[in-house]
Image (cartoon, rainbow, N blue to C red; front, side, top):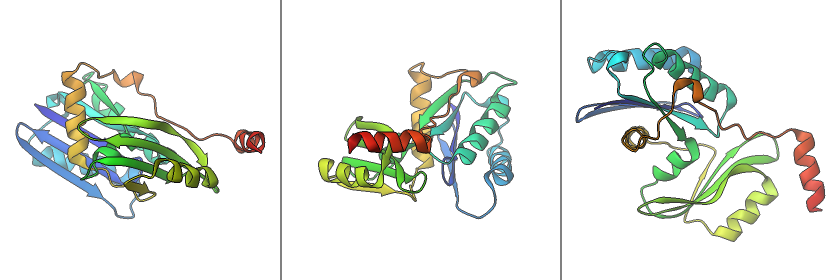
Length: 206
C-alpha cells in the first residue's frame, strides 16, 4: 500500500509509505511552507520511485494550527489528488500530536492562538485515544484551570511534535475503515474566534 501523509499546522511533517518502506521528514527550517512543501513532496516521491497516481490515500492535517500553514498543506494536497480523485484522510492535528506521545496517560495539547488565548484539547491516551475535552479556544486563565482540573501526565504546548509515522498509520487506518473523504470535502479545523466573541464569553464568566 502506498500512503502519503503530511501536517503543516506548525512545522512541516511528512511521511511516505511504499509497501513496507517508510520515509519521514520533519522540516524545521526558515523557508515558508508554500515554498518548501512542494519541493519536499516531489523529492520524496521521486526517491521512493512513486508518482502521485500510485498513491492509495493521502492524509492531511486539518488543524487546529496556524491558518497560513494549514491552508498551504490543504491546498497542496488538493492539487496533488484532484486529478486522480485519490481518497483523503483528514487528520486532527492535536489528536496526531497526542498519539505521537511515547507514553500513555492524560495528554493536554495547547498552542498559542492570539494574545491571551490558546487552542486547547485534552485526551486520554491508551490503546485508543479518547477525548476528554474537544479542541477549542481558551483564555490563558482557563488553560491554567484545565491543567489543574485534568492534572495531565503530558503537556504539549506551542512547539508540538507530530510524528510522520503516526500520520501515515492513521491515514492507512482511515482508508481501511472506509473513513476517507473526497478532496472537495476537506474542511480545516479553524477555531479562532473574534476578539468580540472572546471578550463577551469572558464577561459572562465574570
